[in-house]
Each structure stands twice: as C-alpha cells, then as structure tokens.
Image 1 (cartoon, helix red, strand yellow):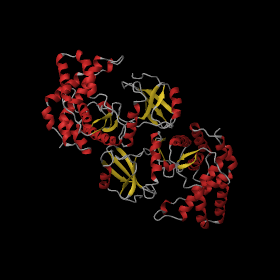
Image 2: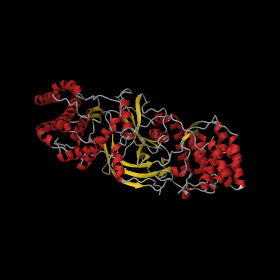
Image 3: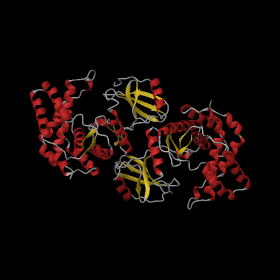
Image 4: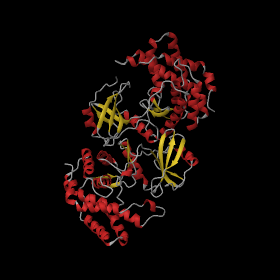
Length: 317
Length: 317
C-alpha cells in the first residue's frame, strides 16, 4: 500500500475550502504507485486524484504539473491539474507538496495488440507536437551523464559478462551524438502501466514525473521497448511497425531519424537496464517488492545489438 | 437548424492539423443554439464541440473563452477550450472566428426539483469563487444603461399598463445603487438550458457568452428567476430556499445581500422581460421561431413586486 502520508476526511475538508470543487463525498487510498501517496477524492463536481509528493519538491514540481496542464489544454487525455482559489496547481497538505488532478477513465493493459500500439504511436506524436509550445525546460535526469555516474556503482555487483556488456554499451553510445535529431518535451516513461484504455480506446496518459526535454526518437524507443517487446525481451516487429506508422502519420519522421533508430533503441534499453540494476542492488527501504527484474532489459538490449542491421531496414517509409 | 456556416470534413481535416487531438472520425451539425454555428466533432482523442462565431468578434471572444479555460482549470464542469499547436484557443475557420471545446455529458432538464436547485446553487457559488482569480473584466452589456436605451424602443409597442410597469420598474431600480454588494465574474444567463445533468447529478455548465463582471447576487437572482419559478411565473419558495442555502454553504451571504435580495429579483426579471420584448418586437431575420414569450417575465416581475415584503423574510439564515 503506497500511502506514506495519511490524509483524513477532516484534513481534506479543510484543505478543499481552498478549491472550487465542492464538498468531499469519498476518500480512498490508492495502493499502486511507488514514489508518492495517492488518494481518490470524490466531490460533488467529480472524481480526482490527490497526490502528496514524497520526494519531488515544490521547486521541482511545477515543470511536471504545468506540463500536464498544458497538454490537457491541448487535448491530450492526461490528468488535468485543478487550480486552487489562489490560482495555484500546487498546494501543501500534511507537510507535503500536494496537487489535485482529474481522474481518467480506463485501465492499463498487459497484452497490447497492434491496434493498441497504433493508438499509442498516434498519442505519443500528439504529445510531442503539443509539447512544442511548452516553454519551460528540464534536463533528462536519466541521460548519459547519469549512466556514467551509475554504471560504476552497479558494476561490482555484476557477473563479468554483464559488466562487460554494460561497459561496452556505454562506450558505444558515447560514439553517437545526435545533435540534429528533433527534440522537445518527452514523456520518457511511456510504459504499459502509464497508458489507460477504455473499451480498447486509449483514454489516458499518466505519470509525467520523468518528463523532460530530449530527443523525440528516444521517447519512441523507450515506448517501443515496452509496448512492442515480448515477455522474453524479443522485439515484435508488427507491433513496432504499427506504432511507428501511426506516429509518422501525425509527426512525419525525418531521414536522420531512420539512421539513428537502432542506436536509440539500444540507448533506451540501456537506460532501463541500468536503473533496474541500480534499484535491484540498492533497494530503498521498504521497496524491495517493487524492484523489477533487470534481466528483461538486458535481453532487450542484447536483441537490439544482435539485430541491429535488420532494425535499420524495418521502417515506415 | 442553427448551422449558418457549413463546415465539411475536408475543411476540418485541414484545420485539425493545427491541433494535437488526432484525426477526425465524425462530424455532426448541432440544431440547437441561436447565435452560432455548432458541430459535434469526434476524433480519436475524444468528442468536442466546434463553434463558429457568427456575431462575436475575435476581439470580444477572448474574455469568454479564457474564462471557460480558467473555470475548467478550477474544477468547474464547463466546456474546456482546446489550445492549438500555436497555443491559441481561438482560430479561424471558413472566415469565422472558431473554437473547439470539450463536449460535456448530460442533458438539460425542464422540471427541476429542490435537489436540482440545490446543486445549481452550489455550482453557482463555486463559479463565483473560482472567478475571483480571473483578471480580465467585461461590463454587463444588458445592465441599467442598456435598459434605459432599450425601453424607449419597445415602449410604443406596449399596451399602456405594460408600458407603465416598465417605466415604473426602471425608475424604481434607478433608486438603488448597490455599490457595496460583493461583485465578480457572473454567468448572467444560468437558465435551465445552460446546465446539464447526468443521472440527476449536475454534469455541466455551458454558454458563457453573456458572462461579465457584476454583482454576484444579481446572478443568483437571474438563476432563481428561472430555476425556482413555475411556468405561470410564480416563485416556488422551497426551490428558492434550496438554491440559496446550498449557495450560502459555499459562499456565505453578507447581511447587505439579504437587504438587496427583493430588488435584485426584480432587476433580473426586468432584464429578461425587456430583452424578450425587444426580440419579440424587433425579430432578427430568420429568428422569429426562437423569440420567447415576454409575458412570462412580466408575470415574474409582477409577482416579485406583489410579494416584496415577504421576499425579504425568506432567507437562509
């Protein structure tokens, strides 16, 4: 149960006087979510998600919360932050930065079809386009700099072959600098658990707390590595093509993106392999149950390396 | 059929390239609505209402459209304007100013109960509170100045007793100047057809194109004069009390508001009696079928005059 900070109806009744969403009728803790405390809040105006931020600070949060507001205003079905009577999306509740956002319909799915992947591709391209007019910027906190800092920490815990694979991949990625690839706001974590479907129609995109400004193609690679990969870590080409095609229909790829694609798929696999290795070997107190198996992304990475030449050929044009 | 300007799927497909809401899947003209052209627009992101403004200009519209965006961000279930890729809520389509807004669930009701009226009171108070942080200002285009300009135009068309009632009411209202009453953004047209209910729960507030900055109590009077009045023009005290009580629970009334209440009810009745008289005697081409019977609001006004002393006693505290 991921409720780290308890909120009572009495706490919330007082807090909601600072909003124009009516009176509280129901309050339920939400079990999922690793990093924050979340509650479903129902008032006579509707259903909301209340988040108390356990790690992100009031200084870091505006980029993410204002981004959700911006994307929601542009027709992206993401949580829409509710402004207080003082016109702020961010408040404080029980000593933690806190926000209320709209509650979206739908559930995440575990076994995506090509149709689901096509919808994801379309939505990702729409997010990239809608993000173009979002002025604030945020560096990628899980980029090459982080790889180089983190790899030496996990290296001593790895068998030799894996340590070598990690070292070699970081070296390989450092050979490439994609200054000319189109960039913008990226979600950076668009896994299956961050997209909701209602009656097989994409109904929501959630969890923007890794969003940052980086290469769009990298965001697509992160997404493909989850949506278009089997549980054994093998790329499903049909699903990948479906995703790429529908993305391309909204935001057409440039020629250099094709050239960079296999390297990006490897970079995206590296990033999650490494973060899972880190979480596995350095679990945070009470979070062991959430640590995901790092081996999955090792396999994804190895698959991309093995089929690199072929990956270059599978493309939308 | 209120589609004054035709929009084809081809027109719209081109126009929607300026938005991040996906591809058009359905387009339907909307029959209701007197002043603008409206269409239901369905894309893979959702359902929207496209409005082409036939009278309001691109200079006048931002107050209303930004107000809807502001209220939606504060948790008021009103149409939420969709921003274009150029970050604008207002575009141009087929030569007219045009906007896309979210489509709300629910239908308007004709026979409100005390429970419906209580929900309306709560929502109106929430709108007034949420509007406090909306910076732009707009004068009431149907206020005392307009009464004084318009009354002489309809006067020659009225039987003597009615002309006398109108003249006397304008004179009476001029005796009162409520400088100290709390003011802010008001909807100014919160009739039954501008509120939607879904399964008896208030699900939407629409049509903000008469919104302006004026006395909050006047907005309540306009609302009560429609929601809490019988088809014979008689005030239903139970419904009125339900509306006032639930409003008061969100935004408590001040003592001077009680004193002003009967005069405000008369002012609100006068405003709609006069505009209906005007529309009746000076129909705009092709709009005769929409002109509503002015006699209804004459009765409402006469009822308020007859029961003025009693009205002073019916109050929430």
